[in-house]
Image (tube, rainbow, N blue to C red; front, side, top):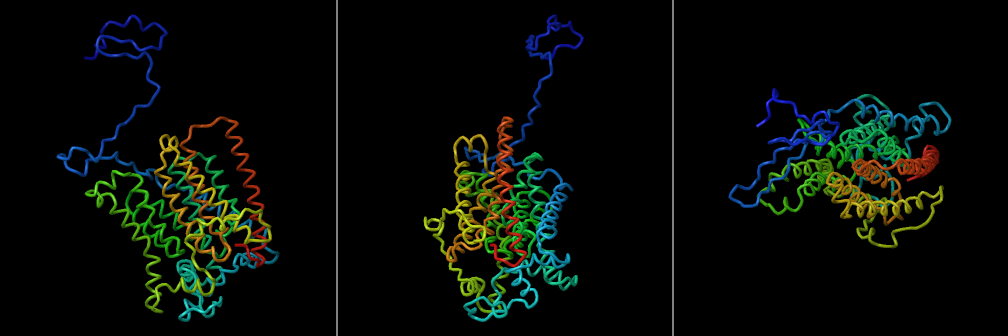
Amino acid sequence: MRPSQNGPTNKWTTLPSKIALKTANDTQLLEPPRFQPVLVEPRTEPCIGESFRVSSALPKAGPMNSKPILFRPWALGLMMTLLQIIVAVGLIAPEGPLSYRYDTLIQHDSYWFANIVDRGYETTVPPISHKMMEVSNVAFFPAYPAIAAVLHYGLRLSIYDALLVTAQAAAWGFWSYFFLFCERWNISPLLQFFGALSILAHPTAFFLVAGYSESLFMMGLFGFMFWSTAEGKGAKALAVLHGSLMSATRIVGIPCAAYPVVQTVFRDGWRGLVEVRCWWRRYATPAGLMVGATLGAGLFFFYCLLRWGRWDMYMLTQQSGWAIIPDYLAVFKPSSYHWLVPALNNPTEASQMTMTLGGILLLAVILCELLPVVRRRFPGTTRVGFYFCAAVIYYISVSGVASVEMESMLRYEFCVHALIVLAILHFLHQLPAPRLWVRASGMAAIALLSAAGLSVQGWYVWNFTRGNWVA
């Protein structure tokens, strides 16, 4: 029973004490509590009937994208993209008219994409034993040249402009999804700034705005991860759309399609795997997203089968023209790792060193997540999918380029770098605020490393826009 509000006043209320006063049947606080009330969510119903003595119910997961898609992430993504274009074209590209400076972002692999846009896929069966795009050009996945072809034939853009607009629009999408993840996790603006700086300062980040497929693949990957873990109307359809684009852009997108299944398995733990009766309820949607995300690559392989009678024509062309012979044990061979300081004018040495540093960073982060104190205090179920995709991309990239002395690994590792940075931002957000000197030291270290990375990137952009091979 609550005491009557008209009753006699407690004689102790005049004391300045903050200690609770206990009356007959209840406790009266002289000051309101400092803490917000805790809302207890109802537990979900178990998938197994009440006759079973152990309940399989799990706490209901809250929506991961409860905030609406705001204007800010897209505006920041556009700013980052324009910044990259302005620096590359306006400051570093060789002298000449603006259109000429802009077209210097078309180099090397870009000419192969332009050839596909102009002529479509052509090859002999089997492919020729050396690089000749006029004879065999089925060495690249179709999404990037297909979208550029739509812009070329639909909007009458030149082939080079269509390739660059496609890549730069995809770069805008990638940066926007980076900031959308930050908004979803409530990452502070300071952490967002240093996270974006860490990605921007990677020596090969300029490939996002060059005539290459990196930006389209990364936009598809980040969009797939974002929408597959989102709730709301159309989220799953957008996830399948981004996933199909991802797998139709790069072959490493095929295993990355397992991201929603990996996320669900680690979220539910062993209990979800043991309860066979609940598999359909728990894993039907993630499995459907995984299958849908592989449609892009599947349609490409089916096209190759119908036209040339070989679904693996892409692999055959890579093996014949590029001497790409996959070595799936390369990651486990000590001879694959190189401990040397690369020369600035030797991109192959830079790729070899990047392969070593990228492997060490990925292994260190995963081992840190496996520490009991980290697993107990900072659960990483949200980050496990990022580590999975990073590990898959790293493994397949190393396996593919091991036969050519790790050539281009510097560029392939960039996507791994971006995934690890985003996962680290989520981890740092969970940590309690460190002391001022710790934050200052961390910011200074990132600033110094970013300055070094931007300097190397500037050198690579200078060489790339003048036709030299970089990665």
